[in-house]
Length: 396
Image 1: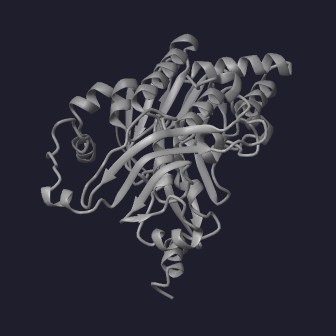
Image 2 (image 1 turned 180 degrees about the vertical axis):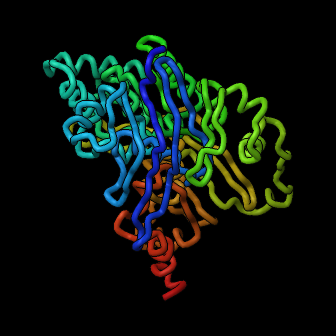
């Protein structure tokens, strides 16, 4: 019987916080064989990502680990920095949860993929660039010959995720650790990315460790499932058994929480709300990113109209790069509009000054796609939450 690609025994991760060691993952035991997909599922904070990062020692400096983690029979815990560098990317590749923080903002995505290729293979710059374009084409990034020279901030959230997946697949790794690989992707691209991962598994007989809370992805991809709660393994077994006959109460609770299409209560807006003035109104709005150097102007949204009334919930859907986030950012004045009319609570902010926008922003809020890049890393979360209240002079 062939040995597993990844073998984890009694693996424990703890973090030193305010003079106390807090366990994040406790006595983890699992194997991932060649050609197999193991999914680790659980709620936020259960220790899924910590376990995945600990495999190749990518944890924060205040972490300590114990137990054993072997990749192709070689012990990774306590391995030298040079051994880990050789293994990362080539033997074990990661797809991280937040592409904006995983990709280097000062280098183009092409440079980062080329760097990965040339670090692990004897390749010239031209050959590596051609392979990078091939990888970007494979993950369905539009105009790969042009996109290769774009910086991460010039791509949509979904396109950044695909660029990171291209980088992860560059060296055809034996073990792919995918931490929420389809979080920022629309359903059509999600299906294509899952197909890519399946193809990698079948073509190279790679092992996949999948970290996710999306039970649809788990049902589609996983051979085995490991359920985590509060750092502990509560259940581990074949995918069919976990879905059809879960034993632990938490596993049953997790599956029962998965929403099913058509089962939610139908919502309709009260007729009286339509008689009121809309909270937000966009009329024939066009949003463009201006010309910068040799990069021409890019029109992201054209002739867009929308009205949202008090108490109404509107879902704006579309594939990656379709302009959803651009509309959301422009709607509260974070992006200027090129033409058209934009009103918030009856006030025209189409050409509003920063002072006027400051007043408006007291009554609007936005939840960004990527929390790690929108929260200030130098401030405790309490200060980040309190800062807008202080600036608005609601509290001292």
